[in-house]
Image 1 (cartoon, helix red, strand yellow):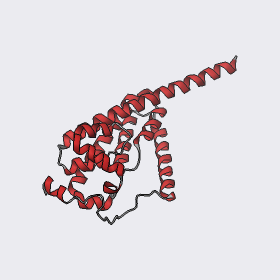
Image 2 (cartoon, helix red, strand yellow):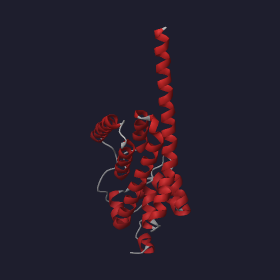
Image 3 (cartoon, one colour):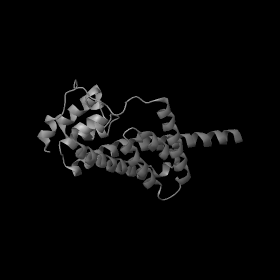
Image 4 (cartoon, helix red, strand yellow):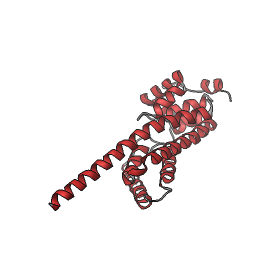
Amino acid sequence: MDTEARRQQQPGPSAPVKARRGTARTPHTKKLGRLVFASVLDLLDKRADRRSYPVLVGGLALLATLSMCVPVVPLLSAAVLLNARRWKAVALCAALGSGVGALILYVIFHHLGWVQLLNYMPELTRSPKWVTIAGWTENYGLAALLAIAASPLPQTPALVFVALAELSPLAVFAAIFSGKLAKYGLTAWLAARAHDSMHSDTEGNYEFHRK
């Protein structure tokens, strides 16, 4: 199905949609999310001193991106606090993992098509934020995708649009990777500075009590 045919099948925001899953997070979902995050922190803590640590963070960023609901920034911040010395490698691997995850989602969205995507994600037409983001992507293309990837905004609606518009997968990956590298690089740098500051304060307090 070509791009024009795909767009013609897209219903307007007021079209009735039978969603297969709800969008609200239940208390059980939140509890499960906390348990998963605690398990991830324990995993990171045990492997923080290994050479493969940045690769592990990149793999976790990939899985978080594929989940479309787990934010990478808290994961990245915790990872850097556990090993601030390698913040550059951690940020790079996280951006690479997130970019690969986004590329996988791009391929999945492209093959599913608009109708199936709308069944799974009714937010595409019901959420004003998602509609706005999709509009930005339609108007500005890869530049909007890069800006969205570098911002706190959800990138899923932008990925859906570029997948249905059949933009170059390589160009999509480059835009996502560039945006994430800027975002995660800044996040990791701030986390590393916070780690150094806390470490300095701890040493200062220790010396004070020794006198």
